[in-house]
Image 1 (tube, rainbow over the protein chains, first blue to last red):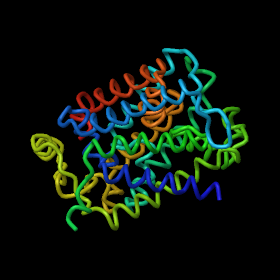
Image 2: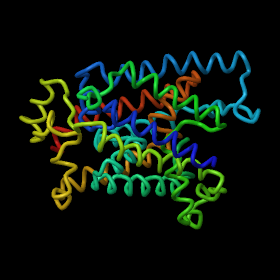
Image 3: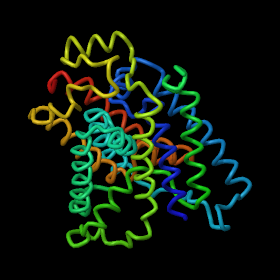
Amino acid sequence: MRYITYVLIGFFFGIIMYKSEAASWFRIYEMFEFGAFHMYGIIGSALIIGVLGVQYIKRNNIKAMGGQEMQLKPKDKSIARYLIGGIIFGLGWALAGACPGPMYVLAGAGYISILVVIAAALFGTFVYGLLRNKLPH
Amino acid sequence: MELIYEPWPWYISGPLIAATMFVLLYTGKQFGMSSNLRTMCSATGAGKAADFFRFDWKKERWNLMVVLGAVLGGFFASTYLSNNTVEINERLADKLSNEYGIHSAGEAYMPTEIFAMQNLGDPLVLFVLIAGGFLVGFGARYAGGCTSGHAISGLSNLQLPSLIAVIGFFIGGLIMIHLFYPLIF
């Protein structure tokens, strides 16, 4: 039953990604060319509501389902890993025109070629795991 | 009826993304779409090769369920809710057409020159798909999150690391589009 909840959450997220066009290569290209407000509007409005909601949760100490703590742990401090990792991610995001969420949405939409991107992303994750101890964090 | 096929404007989509994050938080989880890649590596035995994949992936099965849902959502939206075309800035559609040989802006959801199955044998297309995917997978784990994990979840929680990561995403994206695209396409 719990698993069905997560499938449903993913389902709605998938529809949002597709209908908002955030899953389209063209929109990602347009964003990095500063050609439209669309993507900035999506991220910006999600963020404004996200910040307000998270602050509300924290101030009122609202608990998750079943009384457990909300997963709002701060990340470890570092600059190198976030900056270098972020730049590498950004290069890929702009090249494939897809980030991890939309990849799956596009697979469902029938773009067979995106399976190559997903397989390569899995391989990239694997290689990171192998090299992790040798990289600056 | 036409209304169903129209793309959703940003002020509908953004709040719905925030809502997705809150629902996940309420179920005791975190919103982030790249950690499932690590879970999949672990589930397929990558733990034999690196410590990073040695964890109880069965506890993370929920994120594979979110992935399954996203696939189904993509199928549903593309089949029933969309005419599968994306209109972008006309100047950029012309630029794609004239400078990069990508003529499908305004006619398709994804550029057919890169994502049509019949072009999968083209070495340049394969390079774009494989290099793009690899960098996304490697970079997301290195940075500890992707667009949803850092740009939405992390920034909503006002985390400095997420701000640094998002700045990195944009540096990388801008370098790719403005310096590398003219060389690649």
